[in-house]
Length: 175
Image (cartoon, rainbow, N blue to C red; front, side, top):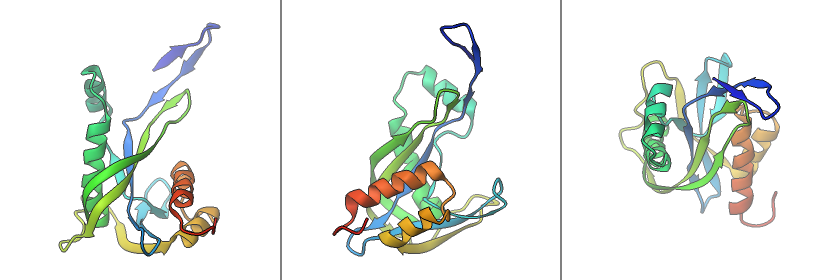
């Protein structure tokens, strides 16, 4: 896709269907659940928030956009679905915490939700074929901040949002 600028220059623009990430926290213990997932693009393991794509294809997303509906409802449902699939956590409800939007030449929104009323599923994860995701990795807020600063969470824009969430939810003044 190309976009003409006011001065006549043409910019190449890429678009990707939006994604979701879910913050699952034990607020009393001040701990966060991170999955550990093998990422082919990194050829390495990465600690991450559970999440995935809201739409399976760019075409599906394009058709949805043409319908004029708000993407927040399918994003919210996908966040709930991904919680059980990747993390093995049954979530009753999620609340939108933040939307991360990339710049002018790459359109790829990530909807970050906070899980409410959740419990660990007795049946565990429901991974898709080929997914390698370890769960039940609970870390203190302080440890998550250290992991972010030590580059143990590779998805940098989500790492920043996670630090913001921790600052908002941390008891005491540890950040």
